[in-house]
Image (spheres, rainbow, N blue to C red):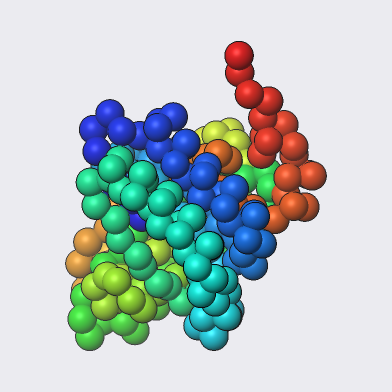
Length: 238
């Protein structure tokens, strides 16, 4: 996650991050990532890169052992650093039990909602029960809601969860908002009381952020580019 200095985002940041992407392609780095720019909150970019094990990351990073590769990335890092106010690296683990109709990221994704929840210490079970009540209600109502659940392992407070929902359009976001009445209708008074009690007991804080995908800063597989070349490889403007 990178927080840009005032006035240092936009095309300036696209240029330095685009240099990273080209260097990644040149080195044939095996792990890919998608970049999202914040629509809400502080100006920042997040880079999401999935991996199956720490060994996989270690193997991929061996490319930096080559002096020429290391030198090139050091040069780009210095230029990018001039634009940044601060940067953070977080590592999450997937939590299938708290995921809901999760979808594999794809080349048509354009927006990302991140629901960030800090769970009170000692109330993990209450939080799991709360999420299961929500998921049961969404299923009963027949909504289009979906998310992948992730638990923070490194770089942030213990007990933080992030629920990610990718959308192909803003219309999909509107659709989910429009489903609120039927979700409420699917909940009994007893369900509502349980949700209020469990939420009060287990949730310390929560915020929801919205991001838009930035193709210029994303290092994606070739099949994604072939699926939508006009988006991932737009023609330069004159």
